[in-house]
Structures are given as C-alpha cells and as structure tokens.
Image (cartoon, rainbow over all chains, first blue to last red; front, side):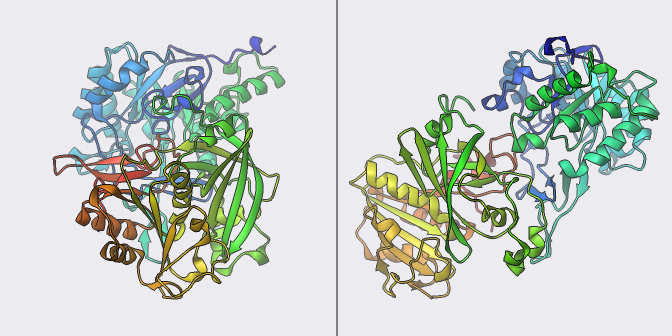
Length: 311
Length: 316
C-alpha cells in the first residue's frame, strides 16, 4: 500500500524522491554519514559551507548545550573550494541524489567565484547561499540583515550559477524576514531556505565569561522549532506562495511529526540538522514517518499537504 | 570514514544496563551489556577509544536526592549524547560487557544515577583511535588525573594481557582522596609514595598516588610524581613510554616532561562534542604541522582522542 504514496517533490525543477534533506554543517561534504545510514535514500543533501579559501574555524569551545538546544560557533571551518573540488566532488558524483553546495564568503566576489567555478559541475544540483555572514566590504554588517545587500548578492550569484538552482538561506535575526525573502525572490532566487540559527549566548557564572570562545553562537535544536514554523508560514503566506517558489523549512526538526508541521506551514521540503548529531540516521526515520502519516491520512501525493494550514 | 573501520559497525546499538553502583562520593560504576552486532563491535573496543551515549531518556532523581549545587543545573534538558571511555571491556561468549565510571557533575550524569538493571541505553561506537603500542617498549607510565583514569585502567588490562614484558606503573592524581575514582580505597592508601592500588595491582602494575590537598599519597601534582619517577628510577629513552589522560593543565605538564626527556608520549585529549562522529567540527584540537610554524585543527573524535604529545599545541 505504501507504494501508492508519492512523497516525491518537484523542487524548482529538481526531482526529489522525498522531502527530506540533511542540513548544511551537519552532514559533512558528501557521504560522511554513510556509516550510519543509506545516504542515497535522502531526498537531498546540503554540504558544509564552502568558502573560496580554506577556513580553520574558531578556537574552542565551539559548542555548548542549552535547554533543548545547542549553540555553535564553528566559524565556517571548511577545506575551501580547491580541496572540495579535488576530494569531495568525485564522491558527490557517486551519491545519485540531488546535492546542494552551501556557499559562504566575506565579499560578494568570493561567493561569485565559488558559484562560477561549480556552475558547470554535473554532480551539483544547486547552491544554497549562506547569507548569515558578515560583509567585510560593508564594515561587517551581515548580508542577510539588509535587503539591499541580499538583492545585490542574489543578483550577482544568480548571474554566475548557470543552470543551477539558487536557494537563499535566510537568517531569522532580522526585523521582518518577509522583507528579506522578498528581496531574494525579486533578485532571482529559485528557492528559499529558512531558518538559519539565532544569535545567542551562554554565560559561565563562575568565571563570568561566555562559554564559547567566540562569545556568541547560533542557537539550534528543538527549542527554536516553534519560531521556525511561524517564520516558514509567514514567508509562505507573504512572499513565496503566490510566486510558486518552494521553501526548504528547517529549525529543530527531530521527528516526522515535526517535519509535517513545516510542510503544513508551507515548506515543500524540510532539512534535518542538529537532530542528526544525536541520531545520525534521523533523516531516514523521518522519511519513513512521513510515509506513514500519508497512509493514515489518505494523502496520495505529499504536495497535497504543502501550505494547507487553515486560514 | 569507513576506510578506517571497514568491518566495524558503529550502531547506534541498544545496550542493556547490567548494574549501576555507587562506588564513592558522587562516583558510580555503570556496567552495560551488548549483544549481537554491538557485542561484536565493542569486543574490539581499544583502550582510549570512546562511545557516544544517549542520556536523553534517563530520569532525574527525586528533588530531595539532588545535591544542592546541582539543583539549578538539573533543570536543563539533555539534547546531545555524552562521550565516555570505558574502564573495562569484557567479552563473555556472545555478549560484551563494558564498565563506565562517572562522577555526578551536571544534568546528564545526575540522570545516569537513576539507571537500573534492564534499562536500555543507545550507544554509538567504538569511536576514535585509541592508544597504540609501539614496538620495543619495556616500561609504560600511565599518568591519570581525576576522571581521566578509566581508559588507562583499560589500557593496563590490555598491556598486562598482551604485552607481559612491559612493566606498568600507574601514576594517579586527584584533588582529594575522597574523589579517587576507584572503589573503597581509603583503607589501602598509605602515606607512602608507592603502594598498590587494587585496581592496578590486579594487572601487575605498581602505583603512585598524588592528591592536590595531601589527604593521601604525595601532596602535590601527579606530574611532579612523574618527574620524581624519572629522577629515582632506571629507564631508557627508547624503551619507555608515557600514556596520559586527565585535565588539560596536567597533559600540558606531562607533554613538557616527555619532550624534555625525549620520550614517546600519547595523550588523550578532551573537547566538547556534539556529534562525536566527525561531522559537526566542534571538537577541534590545535596541532603542529611538521616542519613549519603553521598549526592546523584536527578533530578529537576522528583524529584522536589520543594524540602524540609533541603534536598538540596547548593554549596558555
């Protein structure tokens, strides 16, 4: 009976076998989680953020657990574009599922350079633009907090990325996330992913110092889920629904029930991040749970469920 | 990653709690039983490797049993697995038993105290590299501080079983005698510098004990005991090796002593971990690069937790 359930997704022209991705920064560059699950069974995969030059990342402590969550300040530690191409692309081309490369940078030129170089690689389905980075050229103001900068960077990368799908990943640390989503969409984004982490802090009350070496970090995990669901629904209603632009929803998803909330809120697909640290095969279990929900609720195609939050 | 451990499944496996005994003030010994694929994998667990254990489902003790200093901390929900090494690994037929020593210091260890026989715990592992035993060693010094002791206890067992020619000396450091992570030792502890801790004596190892506050053994740091051992024993550079596990400050001092004596030394490092399986990049260890002033970050969970002491850059 489960064969009759179609949980495939058309995500901006890319066919996904199911709506479940693993989120950037939680699954390596390619098949690092294959000791624990069949990576080929995922709907999609998003790589760790790649920057033009390799980055060492921040000093430790880089993480701290919070109540139903965690802070991270990894510092975009990554092997850089050259090593990514040399070592990881060959593995990615064997993965046979859609792979998005998450791109980060300090200047628009850096983002464009990465996108340009990878735009002709068959193995890659698209890019996820990590705009939660300080724009060094504009005094370190985060790209993702300024609609004008979002417009500029999206336009520039869209020009460079050829046929690849361009997905812009939104930071929730803004006054009105719909304004940012709008800017990205008007500038040519093919898809929107949200949310990235919330800037947060934990203090050691004995030393009176922040727990993280970087002082602040991004909060993720179950604690942020209700905010993420609200913001996904907000962007869906106010920006993407009428334009037919798909949303990749994420933020604290641990179970199939969590994922279904995001889909009802307006996400065409979901991404699992922090939960994979605790349960590496979590994403696969969620795929099975989504199928079960569809069977028990007599849903024959998952797209019937997208954005069905009652008004 | 699969190339490193091609034949070992890493789980998660459901281990069954066999026993959970209090052995001292806020000190417990948890015995877990693996069967099936978990038993096969953990039978091959090497001293110095670790496992990621999910404490999420364990319950808090009743409020009146929570030490006052941990009351506020107890309110925090557990999200992430916790890394533990094992003090003993015992293959019995188709089952493998492992012993884990823990001290109650926070919300996770507090919840572990309520585990009882029959409870299931999800365990990922074996993880990490473990201690390695180079050829031609005659003397092994196992230097441990506080809760750094368990993996070295396991190492003593493996050395005594597989390398009977290696003479083992355990140097145990702790803040105060009460916190010694071995059972009921107070009656055995003498004020002499050298005596046999039962846990190590059963592996044919001599011991030296140091307490910060002088409540037992040598009054001072275990790294000072190590220096004293070198000053008062016969040893040769190429046939002596140090294995160390404990607080960063202790490891830094031990690394210095090893460098000064030009002796092989392996240290087990510790860093906050989220995943423990190499994807989150949290557990960075700053390491020297051969032949340059550059440093790189390696991962404690994958490249370690055991490192050659010459490699590690300690923050001042």
